[in-house]
Image (cartoon, rainbow, N blue to C red; front, top):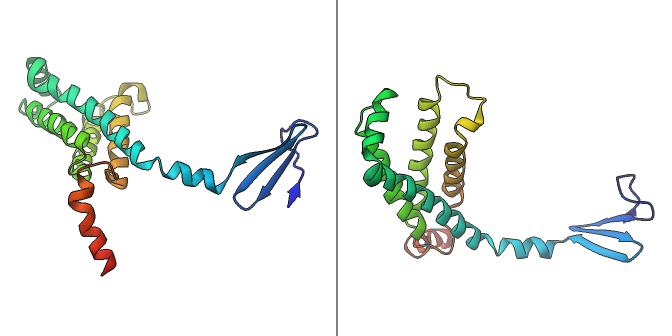
Length: 178
């Protein structure tokens, strides 16, 4: 089925839609824009994408957890009570971030760790920015990005390139076959 559309295409161009394929016809002939095969090829990248997501989130969490536990502990211990939290929350947040980041990198207990990170970062957004303007995203953009990234890992899991897959993946397949 060929239809000429009155879109922003230059004169002499035609947009062809058939099934999952989009083709653009112009002076040089047809060029395929998108197809079902391209989507399947992108689907094959999902394990790599989840691995990169886990590694990047894990590295950021290790950076912040290490600061809370080893390099800037005194400043964090002093700053938490200013926000009405006990100073030992520094250690709780540091342990969750440091060890959670390590677990995310290797892909072990990814959904549980992701849920803990979501809880911690949403708590940080609500607690530390409760007196400020929540529409001022620049004040909590890092926490928001960490929460959304961790939530994506909670929803999608660790992926095929992880320790979760050989440990927990077979049990779910056995249940599906039964």
